[in-house]
Image (cartoon, rainbow, N blue to C red; front, side):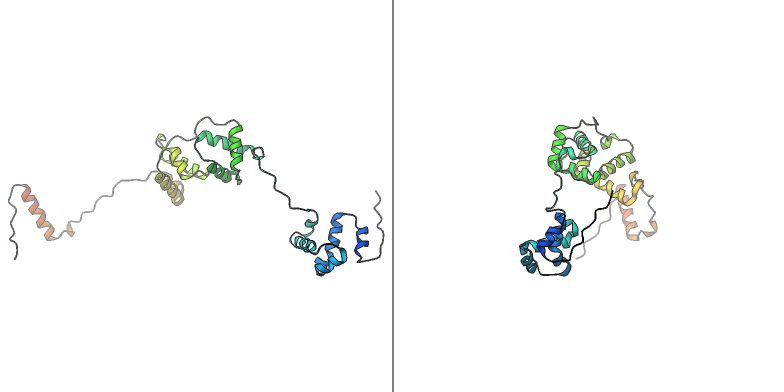
Length: 244
């Protein structure tokens, strides 16, 4: 295909002539601003040359400084597409439904936070309500983790608690779901942060053997002990006269 032969023209700064030479609206828009953004001519001077309002030239020059040539191709900022329940990823919609099955009284706000933790995207409350009302069908029929006291392995039940927290569940929801106190949740999470996997196991509560401290007993304590034993055997306790 033969290349288009360009017509050679005389250089000019006349705005009316330039408008006849330009082929595209974006090209015309740049030529309108070129003396201002390239040579720094005052906008008021360019307004007198072209008949374009000064304020419009200043606004377009500011947009060019911020966005470059892109500012000539977008007459107005593009709006972000409005989020709808159908625009949410299928995995997120499934998670929303399953969370309501697993914990029916979980708040809409917390469901949004859990979605944000997992997908780095926070759905609107309206979208969550729409998904809960319209589906999809739940992928689970029962809770994933049994209550705290129903899990015999101590490490496993603490692991369940840490797993829920990693998914974005709040301390209050974890406590209600596993049927434990909030303090138990805080203690378990603190041990996980400080000790890692070792913090999941039970700690030994065996008492250390008490050291003998007979050599530290004073004579006064020994005498008092003898008096107590004598009294227990029926002997009379010595009487002490009050000093005046």
